[in-house]
Length: 421
Figure 1: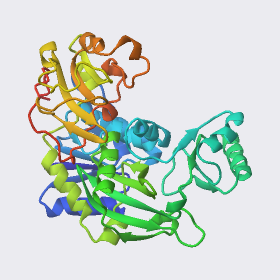
Figure 2: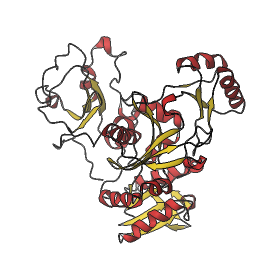
Figure 3: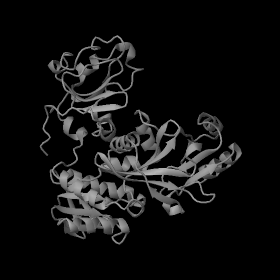
Figure 4: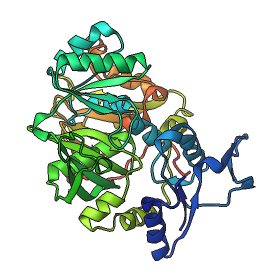
């Protein structure tokens, strides 16, 4: 495998470890400065130049995109995607995770724990927003920040008002978030590679500091996560559209709460505390996946006029309740069920014998007009999600799959469109 690591910091611990792991496994690996690329666009021939020379062929790309170069970095990753080069993390996934508001918005429609959060601009909305998240103390976060920078704890409503007013006067966008008291001063970093957690550590803040980041002096220790925490971390990464991610979780009284999903997680803290070869796990995963480049379904499927992807809910009283997918007649209507959702279970490629019940959700591909007819007229506005044309659907969100689910059905699905590229 010929691997390109996109990094502006070739001497950083993470980049060095990834390069060493690739070298040890006999792969050809190059560290390429993300800012040294030129993106050429021409009909049918997306291309890249590196340091004024046409880029040679690579099998895979591992993006290490820092927050300060998100826009240009994701543009470079997106160009590799258009050239059908496997990217360990997609450009959409990196963009989704980098913005705290965007990531929480995407997670909020799924059955996955997140701290209660609100986003306001009008000064009059601040007090009601604080009350809606449970009152003081509250956490105040800048939308873009790393390593605990831009995260503040307001002990009282008055101090929260003052902090928010100051930040907004500086044109800063902020989130107001419920303070999870039972998790004060500690969190869990789960390192997700593909469909599994390869390492996890608990970080604990020191002294009066409430932020547990290692960069803020927090202490880290290895931890073995139970199945619920592991599945939550993997699902959060997949919903974001990331294959490699550092998922930060709070230990809430009712279970795990996703605090943040990091698309370029550092390796030093996790490898040091767990003594696990995380870099090696990343390289091994990429090597096994190089034949599966990222496919943007919005581009591929919309070429079939009248076809698209939609999520259909089974309401109470539906004629489909009690029937299997095979008995539903959906396939005869040129509608293919790609993913079956029941509660928190996500089952890709469901078998025809799987029985339908009220509340089930089916991610389908087929004729939009026929899928639209499956939703009762009275429920179209209130049901979520309704049938939408594919360009309006964020790929990483709508087509996420939980590959860790033991109920996953492995029968192949014929979609009716080409995915040969």
